[in-house]
Length: 228
Image (cartoon, rainbow, N blue to C red; front, side, top):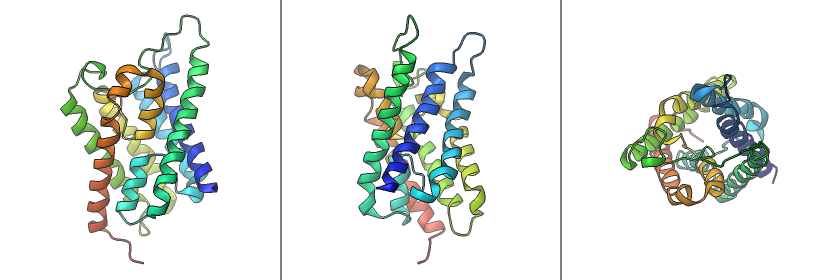
């Protein structure tokens, strides 16, 4: 239960910090942080939580990460579904808090609410195929970094830095394409509040990250298996 509570809190912080920066701060008149600031915000949420809850739950914060670690032989299958449920609930709770905060401003409009999309709902107008390839590849690389940084032979003290910076770079690359998911819990939380098109396109932001995570788990397990 402690692990699940930690995953709930960690995913809550990821969604509130990352999506919150996009909804509240990215376009603030004259002082907006832009998409580079949003990318950094997402990276900082993971970086801070690695050191806050990594020793409790492993700090997955992401169903794709849990799947990738399981495939890579680093996570027990019995914990997979409970972790995913805790992550999704944490994301939804954060989106609810963000909605309460954001809607307190006069003239508030839901808009995209930091949801992920493709086609006309892609920030740069990128196609379904572009979004699919982007999300698979970005999640693949993210899991390669996670599996590598947390390997017993890697310098453990710096794992959080590597993982946080990797997520920042991933956002710098892919925000224009899909608004960056690589995390089904993050995508689900925002889509539930936007509804309509966001729910209709949500399938991609479950399927693509999980495919990327499975591929990374298989590749890294081959490259550097952890011997019991």
